[in-house]
Length: 196
Image (cartoon, rainbow, N blue to C red; front, top):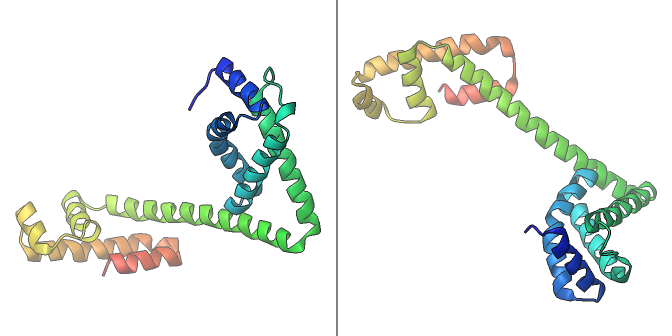
């Protein structure tokens, strides 16, 4: 939902007069963006949701002080930032909350790190597959990646199942040799199951 400055001023003016529908529209307009901003600051969906709720409660409580001629977005985000400062001040005094914040931040970092690691491993494996001769690569891709049967690939490529088996054995040996230099446990497990 996008509003012109004029429409937003009108909404804020109605909100000043305790118009709940105008408040609901302002919430719909800004809550998504504000929630994303809060997650970046506190690294936790749960805490960000609580801070979002607190922000809009404070906004409602101070509705008569909101100036329709000033930037509503700046006013709203300033309330949110003040809530975040209070949140971290409280966390500095509350050991359990401090631990929860640290765990959330570590969990988020770990998730991003694991995703990057997985993508890197997939790329290493794909690079090794790409080094196979074209026909062998095609057979390997169809059997091991797309999980098609030998009979299906035989009919598709018009080659015998024994030729397919030969391609798979040679491709597997080549890829194993090619990947030895990486010494990555997770990659080895992927390859173990893929190259069975």
